[in-house]
Length: 132
View: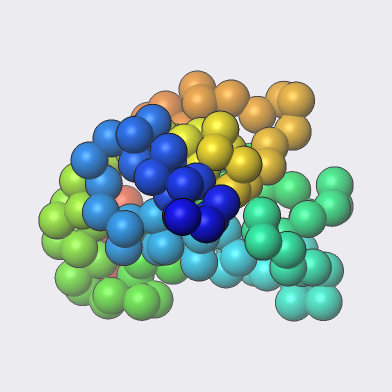
């Protein structure tokens, strides 16, 4: 079994019962968010995601970026797709991100914490406004 496969198994054990698609969505959404915040040229891709201190995305920024990315990708079905994956609040994004960090698939700064993802927005409000 490859190291990458072992890491994904560990991620699922840490984060809980989210499907593979949810983890892939968060990874893709991180890239999207970093590009929106720091610009296309500022993002240097690595196996651990975008790197560099000037490319850092905090928890609240990532949650907002993931909301926008979900709407871009899934349109009016964004919330339905996230709910099908078990993502019903921004705290779920945090659990996924920190499981990936613990497994070595993402990085964090010393200031980052799981609390940064707590109640960043209400899904009812965020996705009803985003769909308008």
